[in-house]
Image 1: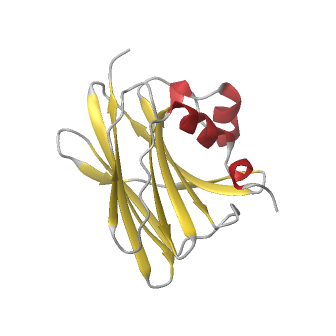
Image 2: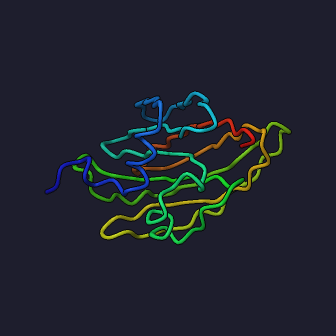
Length: 163
């Protein structure tokens, strides 16, 4: 068994180093992370029946090249990355029963996101790429059934500014 912090992929560690984090623990309730400045990452956490879902939002151009390559994405301006990790109490992969995400902008348009499963070593995460037309605020809605009979929902928002 490895220590829990060592179980997170490099991108999540990078994002947390940049983030002002808001952590909420719940079962069958909702959590909201606060909006953070455009040059930082936003994240939110939900725990249900010992399974933890972490949502993290960052600009892909802020990723280290090796991290972007590992995720199979390009580091580009005007592109956001939603990273979802699901881990058990030991920091090992946990498979959610279901996982959906949406994104909305300041214009009020909401659309579902196509989540893509990625594997880095022994870890399985889910990502979605979203175009950004700065200045804007994107709000990501995540709905997950982490364990049978328990649904979790959370929202995380991020401001994006022209660079």
